[in-house]
Length: 164
Length: 172
Ligand code: SF4
Image (spheres, each protein chain N blue to C red):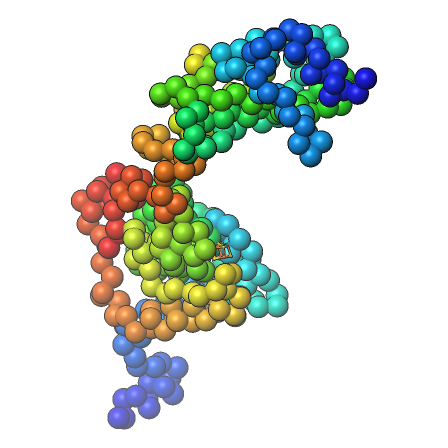
């Protein structure tokens, strides 16, 4: 059994209908999970002795702008045992957008989630230190959202006053 | 005049204070290399033996603002970095000059983006803008020569130390 089928079978067996979609695009396996199961799935993937997805390589988001479920959170996790990188997606629509943090599972997700918060304004519930990453403290917008103008919002970032 | 020829014989010249002071100032402009991104590489190249910025008396690149008269802002200035650039500028003793090196510092350049200051002249008094992305070292040397020309034309009394009050204001 190749690792893709093996992983898919295992997750399907454990999560049943909470596993919303399985896709295999350009040789990348992607599982879409209900957003409230993300920590359970993370724990399962990490602790299951046959899977051992020990490393979280990236957390980011997609802003679909017009869809009802506007944001998709994307995780990339790696298993050294299977030598396999898996993509996990979770669609969220709540207002304000929020999802449970996976820092309890993968500690490395802390800064990725901070970045995602900074750029997309997605609240990671129970995150230990949800501060801005790139933009200055006190900035009120989230630049990678589709409705944010590329040139920025005039006056939203402070400049020193002009030296004479 | 008889006096002048007599003095020259004895090793004296007559001149004005302004001429001497500005000659001294323009012949050793010490740069503060504010190398924030890619333009800094060309600034470094200007200091190497091929372009040799030492010919203009500016080889002493000091990484402390307290010993500099010229800030070469070489690189993309983001809004976050603007605070730092300004703080360093404020620490330089008067009189001081600024070269905006490259498209980024002059106008934001190709980064027409929310995070990049669209021209450092919004918060610094720029003396010379240098075109290019990045400008060649010759271009930077040309900017330096322009600064020297400007210094040569300035009267020494035009520079007064800024009052303490202004300094306090700019700290915040
Ligand atoms: S002007 Fe060009 S070379 Fe210079 S800092 Fe900007 S992008 Fe880099």
